[in-house]
Image 1 (cartoon, rainbow, N blue to C red):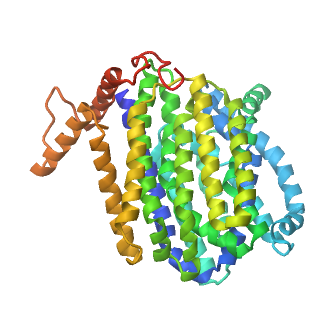
Image 2 (image 1 turned 120 degrees about the horizontal axis):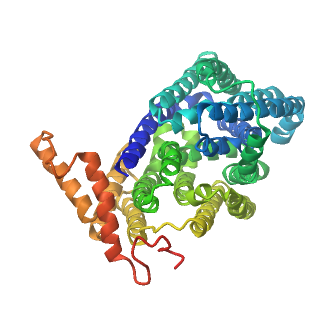
Image 3 (image 1 turned 180 degrees about the vertical axis):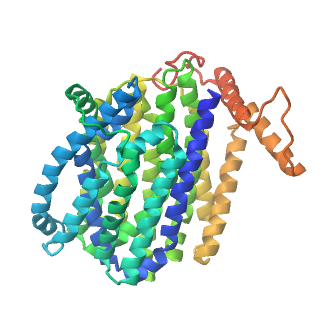
Length: 534
């Protein structure tokens, strides 16, 4: 168990560093971009991104997730090559035909998106770029599965850095505006495809297995409506804003959402590490205990980050963008709440993948997407940008609650409900403290720093006051404090182990204490059906 936990957090740190490094540069460039691109330009880019998002789902047929799941069932390298080659040639044949038809209809698509067909070339380039990128998951997922996180993040980092440089050259240096953004993406994709050839080479052979294809599609196709419903939740608000307002409204909303979506830096890094982790652990006898304890820590970190983003987001918008974009800061906290709910969904829905009950996903996402459409239709005409943000948060909260419930029914995990309640109370209290403690008259930089400090201090204080930390966790924290005060790191006693071993001790101690501190009406940990359903 200790090795598994160590691998998860090592991978999380590596993936997180790569995402933070590239995204931080992109974030710092916002003051530059918002002076070369107007709110309407951002609206055009946002609508093109919706095309790419939907095309990405349709071009993959759900087999990207199926590939990772079925890879764990392959007994030897030949079986893995057969799986990768089958999926590769299927996507090449089917998506090639779909791409030709979509490019032929790009003028019509442009008219639907922008009420003019003059953006047909941008639409066609976006579709072609998505088609090529639709094959990248094969080598990249193998790197994740085999825990070669260093190589994975190096490739992803290089692609992101290349995109940033290309956009700077074309948008600012060459003054190409919106078209420079799209052309930069296409150029980087072409180069990255050549770079990935050595990673594709060991996987692709002239073999094809109809039986494997049926398994992959059987696993993946139910996820297509699920994934489309996800895009409805994430992107439908742009269409409603465009219908009831203007492209400028879409651009403002996109900028505000960008700051709220910055929380996905943590979420995406976690997802990269989490899927191989829980699939690798699922056959171990204490898997549910590991899932329960690690989930508590992940949710605690996520809630702290969310409270911080909600508190400082509007200040960061004022600090980092031109004045034209300042009203967009109002939507940032609500978008951050939506991202937090996505995190809860990722952590709590693993039972559906472990038990291969992926057919449950469309039910949950369908309900959440219907909630999103109804909320957008009611709120956007009346409240505009903030109405779209409210609809986003409500739909993702619906998704998290319903999916976690479905997953728990199939694979009950004894979650630490008392500690999770303390985390929720600490997050709410920290945000409210920052809002009331810092006045609106302060400058954006001073206000952001002050609110951040208040959030962290209040959050940790509430967790301590509510007894969130257990004995094993206090021992590790006290040991870290003593080492910091001494200014050196002595060898651990023979009976204690190093920091990784102590982290494992936290998990074990938490498990033992929870068996005594369970809420009335729950069984002791060890009965796998303890929890909300009892």
